[in-house]
Image 1 (spheres, rainbow, N blue to C red):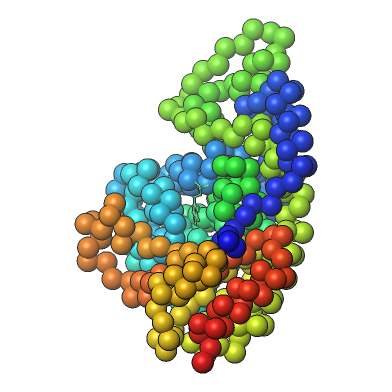
Image 2: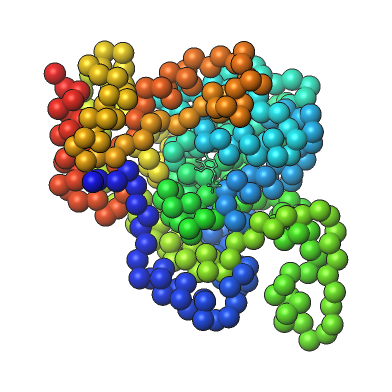
Length: 376
Ligand SMILES: Cc1ncc(COP(=O)(O)O)c(C=O)c1O
């Protein structure tokens, strides 16, 4: 079976986790701090706060941005459900904007039309690693005085206009789930250029506690902590931090290897009329967290039939990105929401295997099965 994805983990990560376990310090500590420092160096961000996953990163970003009950936050419905859930955690209301059918990224023109007196922020999502148009959203956010938050769950290592994702705006949230390009098992990171957000998010991730465990542990004088606001336990462990340091060192190489496979897919599928392939415009650099194909109306079989045919030949696929407003948890609240582009894209797209190392033979098999099904 050719899987859809596989984390790239080696003995380096295993050794690093092993050493950390034997160090006796396993919760948030020196490895997490080092991972944060290196993540800042890699992305060019001023500050980084490691957390337990990207969903908790997004929750803290919503709090830092000041989202309160009743506030509206514009975001795409076509995203993993954690994007809109994070708005709800803070008491906000997700207001869904359309996506661009080629990049699957939130459409700035439609998003701007949704701004009301209640709009407090826009959450953009760099879908499956392809950066959204950050500058367009920065302009909108300045013009209407609303905050900008980036859901970069899938975009570690991607860049926009020559600068890495993580360095462009005040709140950028990453995921290190195994389905992402680098992983710590579970894990997340928020990068920020705002010093006061940084300090507050560091407090919030550890119960609002004014002194962290390590500082208390290392102090020669008796110190007591205070809990200055109601916080959360969103800590990353040092075992995860140690794995993250190793993964980050390999990130650019991982992306290079992924892009070699992408190049083959793009070249060897480009003559099939009934599909649309991903497109990277000038100034946009994707880590290709996933490779998605859109089936046009003239395709000889439906998306689900194609997925079944691929499964029958031993190739795993996934359907395209979901729409939150179509899920049971959101359906009744959003029963009047119509997002034709998002709905059509979700219904007719398919993700194909992409991971490293993926053998040339396996890439060839995926290409030949797709050609066999789609090329007349
Ligand atoms: C766009 C997006 N946002 C948020 C998340 C949530 O990330 P995590 O699983 O690290 O909480 C994901 C995970 O798939 C995602 O794709």
